[in-house]
Image 1 (cartoon, rainbow over the protein chains, first blue to last red):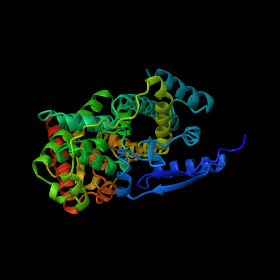
Image 2: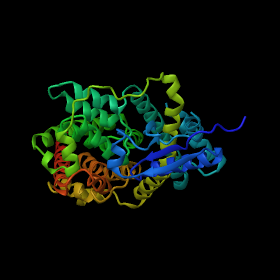
Image 3: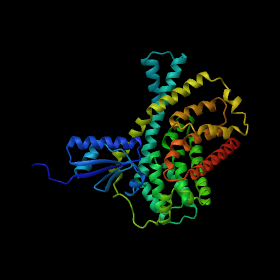
Image 4: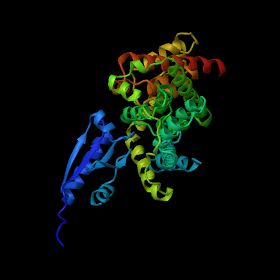
Length: 85
Length: 325
């Protein structure tokens, strides 16, 4: 048993600061804390930075630079599944 | 289809609360409960339907399609129609805009999408269906889509790329027609359905309060605004009433849920439908918060041209409506 010794996950929430993006950030932060996942959660609000990820709908979640969800507010269980992957 | 809601409202107000059917209060409350439930149900159905459409045709796919194909003008109509069936969120306008620009899609086509997206949105459709019936809703949606199409086309003719923000202009110059597909792995509809329904539920939950307040204000106005009050000032068919309605509408970026019940009162008290619809379109289609967001990608001059053109077409369609109906 014991937790896998993984590298810190780099979780980014992309969004221009709309209510949906704030909701998403809250859900992700809450899930990361609850599961005790080793991850840095960062909110990206700069539009030029967001566009580097090639997303057209926000909010979006990127893990280690890869988009894993976009266009809606995820549920906690969904975030859990994404983070555990 | 909505009989059972009426039965429920009757049971709740006249039965459970024991308010007399003959009283003003009873009738008003019954009406209120019925309207609210009906509109929320319609909204849920519409958003679910849009979710299904978007599951098959995500906006990325539209972008890629437009980027690869020459449609000889049909692209304006396609982009505009797509704007109508995509659930609108003002926070996505900028990423969408950039995504389109980078895909080498002409600015006019992008504008067609941007115009229709807030104009014909899910909340507006549900409110119109609930308060005016399907014919007026159809007229509204068709007008909105045509307005986006023609407006986008007209803006496209103006060669506006020089008025983009500098960094967007660079993107525009380096834009490439899309070759690789930028799409998620396909999922079956059944896999997506829970998400779609949950998304629809979230949207309904988010606007419940506005629907209730909107219908409440509408009901109150019905009772207190004298018959033909507006007709005296706005409804006499004076030529300046439509431009005035649109100008008044711009700073009123109330959402559709709040504005449609008020418009219904306007119409009931004698304002011509065209003037009312122009007001509605000005409210949802030309909003100052959206203009602020667009400042990141456009110069003020371009925003002014964009809003000015859309306003002009809204006014024009208002005249057209009043002429026809």
